[in-house]
Amino acid sequence: MADTGNGTTLTLSSTGAVGNVRRITGNEETLGKIGVSHLGTTGHNEYIPGDLSEPGEVTFEVELDPTTAKPGLGTVETATVTFPLGSGGSTAANTAGTGFLTKVSEPTFENETLMVRELTFAFDGKTGPTHTVQS
Amino acid sequence: MPTIKVELRKHVGIQQTRLGSIEVEHAQRLIMVTLVQNDGTEATSQVGLVGTQPGAPINFMRQPSGQEWPKPIKDAVRKQVALELGDESRNEAQPPAPQPVVLPVDEEELDDGDTDVMPDIDD
Image 1 (cartoon, each protein chain N blue to C red):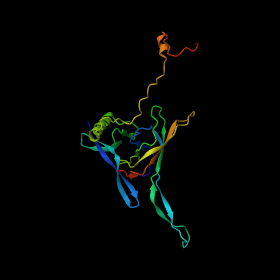
Image 2 (image 1 turned 90 degrees about the horizontal axis):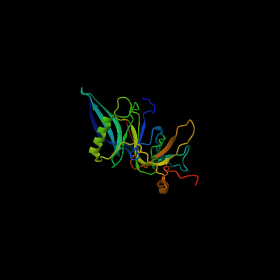
Image 3 (image 1 turned 180 degrees about the vertical axis):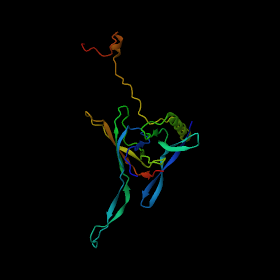
């Protein structure tokens, strides 16, 4: 069933609240490739999958709340992106894993513009990232 | 009046590896709340997450309507978290209280009867 991102939440197990989240750029896991072409290869280059994948990172934009402490970098914790709950479910799908914040930006101060802060959470690959489907 | 049941469910996710799917348990619990109505009908929903490490905050999710969860539900969750995870000091994830601003004041300025804490600019 197609749906929008409205209702998606992000939680950081130690940092806690970071403010109202405006946008979450979903995680992207990547796997390298190893070239196995040789002098007898014809047509296209040939590849095999690499051994280890990159766990990826999540970037999110939050409304800046002046009463909320600036999140610290490097604290290892679990980040969970909980998808919107579809009809008939009790537990929403989620993506979760351990990692740490690698970027916390200050907002751009401008008339007629919300103050927003951008944060980047890098999965460390030790626990997850995992994906759990809605149930 | 409905009855509130709280369950802290292990958060087990599925990780895809080259050898297939494996189950991975995270160091946090899914907070599941069941409301049991007087006629016996039940409705269960996840209301948040809580880390298993001491002092980790309780992260309540927003309801679909954007509203906060009712106080009886929050209280029941806190009670169950304290019971199962053995840490009664956990608070709901919320911004810390703003710290008071303390300005340095010259004590002599206060003792000379001048109630204005700002130094005189015509000295």
